[in-house]
Amino acid sequence: MRRAACALIDLSALRHNLEKARAAAPRSRVLAVIKADAYGHGAVAAARALTGADGLAVAHLGEALALREAGIRAPVLVLQGLRGAAQLAQAAAHGLDVAVHHEAQLKALESAPAPIRVWLKVDSGMHRLGFTPRELPEVYRRLRAGGGVPVLMTHLACADDRADPSTARQLARFEQAVGKLDGESSIANSAGLLGFPDTHRDWVRPGIMLYGASPFVGGSGEREGLRPVMTLSAPLIAIRHLRAGDAVGYGGTYVCPEDMPVGVVAIGYADGYPRHAPSGTPVRMAGGRAALLGRVSMDLITVDLRGIRRPRLGDDVVLWGPGLPVEEVATRSGSIAYELLCNAGRHCHREYR
Ligand SMILES: *Cc1c(COP(=O)(O)O)cnc(C)c1O
Image 1 (cartoon, helix red, strand yellow):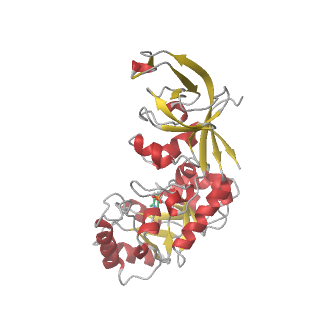
Image 2: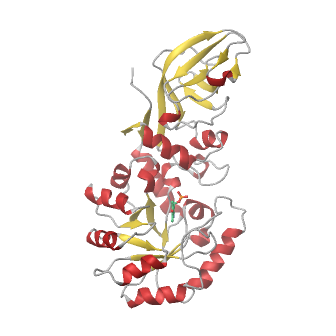
Image 3: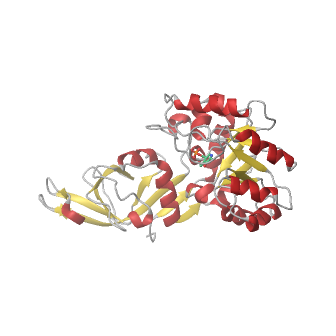
């Protein structure tokens, strides 16, 4: 019997999804976003599999340095940019691209000894990171004075809803802001890439779609032609025959309506399975789909085995993967696929295929 919960990572699915991104934005170069340990899939393994990408993006310098240490030579963009002059020297030494979204970063760059490729972040309406359209001309002038031509970049706040009008507004604001400035540009995350062709530009920056999940609210990766990369599974470690009226798990929130078989699976929130998955959330077993019963514990869940033919100890129970979309589990749990993948990948043993 396998020891515990396992996240099986299918690298051919990852490459397939990269090709889907390329096909959807054929005139753009692809910066594959592998921040947060490639959304839980393992950043170094993902980087090695994604040799077809034109570059990679991570959130912090530490993630970029780990890629370089592992021998990854591809262009790497640090999306949050840097904090302080020491980081700038490291980024330059390792040939990293950096985002610049704040006056403090700009100042540090102006006194940097070595040239470094800059992605200039414009706030087109998300109001998180970036210079305002009003600040942009002066910031751009200062960067050009340093010699390089920055890539002009912005980020979309509401593209996960194809009907949301704020994406068009962000696009218009970005266009107006960068209008006459020289340089490549980049707008689209996965949702922009799949839902808003006007946002494609020189570089697209897909993240979640590479891992096979849809970026859209209520969406399905499969419907977008994507393949799930992670299969999260754990062994069935007990089969109980409970009686009508027996309450299951912490708080006794599920009460058996009849005499019934209940399975115990060796995974819980400590392994990254969502704590708020309610009774009824599906799992997949050899015999079919079964439903979660009662509360998710730290390292165990209980499932309804009434519909499962001949369940056996040690059977593999799939929490998400092919045939059981992570989006479905996320929606039921009041979360998003991004969070579930990051958490499971961080806490479970990973295997690669
Ligand atoms: C995370 C991130 C992306 C990728 O977003 P997805 O929704 O996962 O495609 C793109 N650009 C920036 C700046 C990001 O932070």
